[in-house]
Image: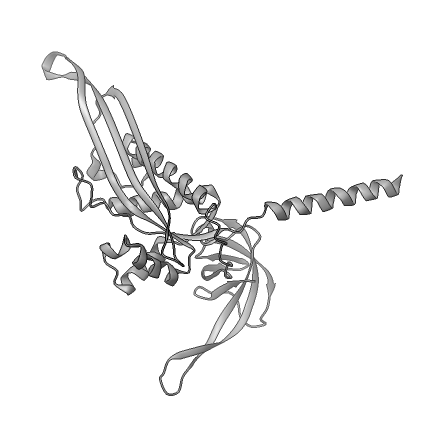
Length: 316
């Protein structure tokens, strides 16, 4: 009886391991470029206040992370590459030029596109006047956002998918004026407005289509490189890294903190060719946010060194 139970238990464990392995999915590494908003004709907002193209790309990052099908590159890294390579706006929307950007970033796919509509129209439906010049009005507000998005394979510069996302939110209520000059694009306040709701709806629709078509393309995801980052905070056994879920960090991941003792330069060119480092500590992730990860020191690897801000870290 005991033997039969033991064999049954082994079968259950073995089956679970097979299912877990089968369910594990390698994720594509992807970057979202700033969207082109030049085709929007009615620019009713203060152009110096909002960058609609970057706002839309930020929403795409949020929605693509929700699909749990991609590893995303942070916008700061993308902006740095665009600045260093001096790519103009026209270069960002050209698949061949964008492919070069993608290779520098080390991603499988790039998401790019344009915002074709970003409209907000309001009209008084009715109004009631009271004494002393007071009144109450009812206003109809309609927000529409339309986006064309493309998925570009960075290896071949081929457009894998071209999709359209559209969102619309209409409401009729007591007229309350919104001072858009005081509302930050992408803020919690913006997201509650009709325009914010329409934007999320358009981006969510486009993101879902891109995710489906990316995994039907037949391309195998590139092998994930070991995640690297830097210590942003260190106190006792608590360490906070400057990388988080958007960089692929997950709970219980283990990293090694290193200390750069000396840089090695080529004696002729003066170019840095290597570094002399010493392992400081082994840390384990206990909490993950989008752009940071809190870790606990699980093993000290140096008798004299302790984790410090600026120390490089690498996934074990």
